[in-house]
Length: 171
Image (cartoon, rainbow, N blue to C red):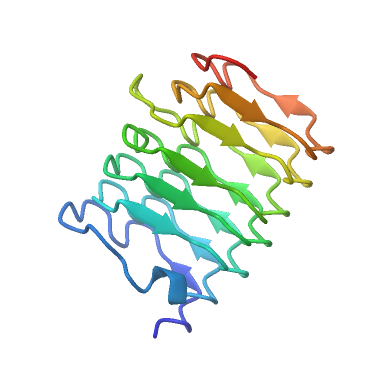
């Protein structure tokens, strides 16, 4: 397996437009960082980071322009601290599900992290249980088209930045 990998570097799989799956992603249990633009412009449909207990950060534009994404899972990524600027920028035109369940150390969803170019399909954004979340950055979920945003248990949340949920229907 790939359980010894601790880092995926900047531009590692950038512009791999034929990459549709990364089957061993869930086996990368020691992975702590995904670098800048590591998977930008890929055709991955599912990014399942479930149980990546050592994942701390997702770099800038890591999955940007990966327009085939349907599902992103952060289940039990209990060390995940930061989803960096534009991490999933323009990768959300088909994205329907983002699961933050158990990402209890997530502190920052940075600017334009899940920004979409007016074609979003995310129906709801459930941030409940993100007990360490302090900041949702500028335009973080802009154009997501979510009709429901849930903040239950976000007791540390002190900043929802400008335009964070612009063009979402209700909160």
